[in-house]
Amino acid sequence: MSSKDLRAVLIDACLQADRLGLNSGTAGNLSVRYADRMLITPTGIACCDLKQNMIVECALDGGHSGRWRPSSEWNMHAEIYKAFPEAQAVVHAHPDNCVALSCLRKPLPAFHYMIASFGGDDVPCSAYACFGSRELAQAAVQALQGRNACLLANHGMICFSDSADKAVANAAKLETLARQYLKAHTIASPVLLDEAEMRTVRSQYRTYGQQPAADISGNDS
Ligand SMILES: [Zn+2]
Image 1: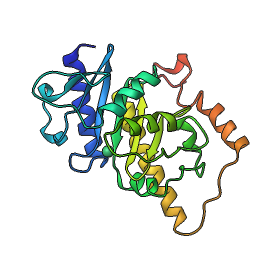
Image 2 (image 1 turned 90 degrees about the vertical axis):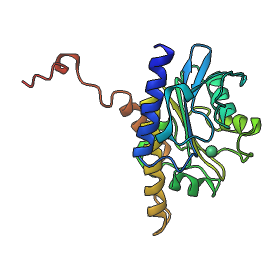
Image 3 (image 1 turned 60 degrees about the vertical axis):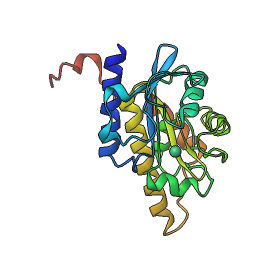
Image 4 (image 1 turned 135 degrees about the horizontal axis):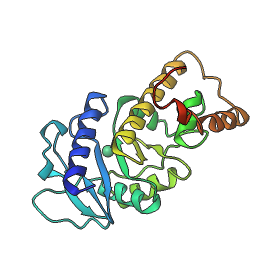
């Protein structure tokens, strides 16, 4: 995809994140992989004001040129592209329920089978490090081992996927699950699914949502 097309994809994804309530003000940022670099949202611009020329083409060492400066969290995006070759898009956000949970500095456990869709039996919470720091980028990569999403201690969440729209959808799914977990927790500690149950869920997920080839035409017989 050309740089121009990817910029349009990135802006669409930002607007979708906004519609889904993932953004608060200018907090949160998105990027897509672009060859050996990335295209990332600029720092300090609300997504409703975003134009294609404001998207920053940024090397994975932070090098960039032009008028617009990349998101202050460019380090975290860059380290994820370096560590996870399958990552094509990264979403970082501060939605309320993920933030609330991140302040407990505990993983989001297997209270619901959909936790398995993030790659494991929980969604971990990273160690704490200051926003924008290299230490935070390293803590995020460490928490993401074997996962495609994690909470960031006293901060928010970050996730990656193979496309920008899927990464936004995964971020929204994590926020929904965080809300549901916190809601259950107001009554009592939720019963967790055990390892065997989560193994079964993961094997079910391998074929989940796939139609037999013959049925893709939409013809019901
Ligand atoms: Zn942040």
